[in-house]
Length: 85
Image 1 (cartoon, rainbow, N blue to C red):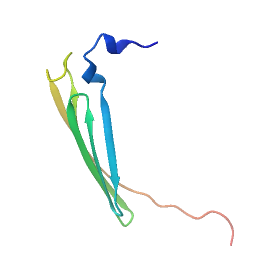
Image 2: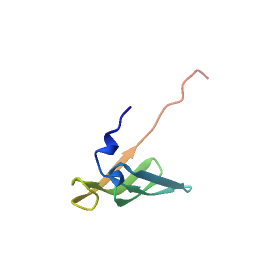
Image 3: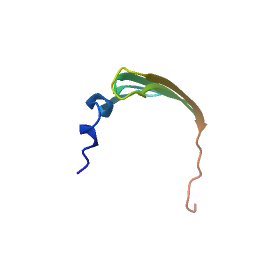
Image 4: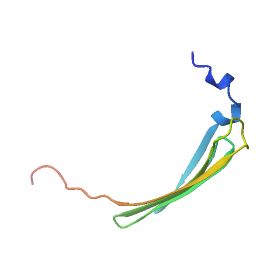
C-alpha cells in the first residue's frame, strides 16, 4: 500500500477537472494541488489549437511556492480511407 500522502500535505495530492465540449470549442477547468487550472481547445478545419495554464506547488505545503505554467499547441490531423472501392 502506497502511503506517501501521509508524509506530505494532503492538498498536494488533490487533482480535479471537468471538460465542456461544444461543436468547435472545448473548455477545461479544474484544480491541481492548491491552484486553479484552465484551458481551451478549438478546431478550425483541419487545425486544432490548445492552450492551458496550471500551477505546480514546489514547496512542502500548499501555498508555499507556486510555479505557474502555460502551454500552447497547434496541430493538424488528416487521414486516408482504407479499403478498396
